[in-house]
Length: 94
Image 1: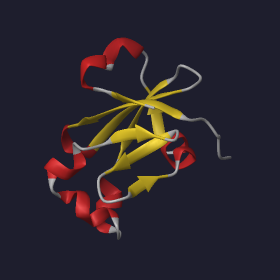
Image 2: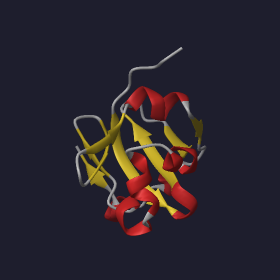
Image 3: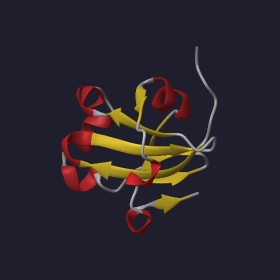
Image 4: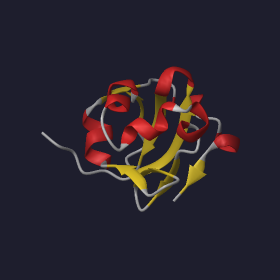
């Protein structure tokens, strides 16, 4: 079942992982690596581009008008117990 929650914070991490905080306060980890073989996300194989992840309109976006549905991020991610893992100094907010 798809859960419709906005992303409020994101941090791009090594190995194409996204650390996400959702509007319900949950902090989750999403493995973006499988998406890098699909267009248009193949543009993000360059880690510099991947690290350009930011939150806009409740989802994760990258330069070049790339974004991914927040329900995909939520449903495909796993919970992280310690929500303080996101370093807010390196996070973009909506």
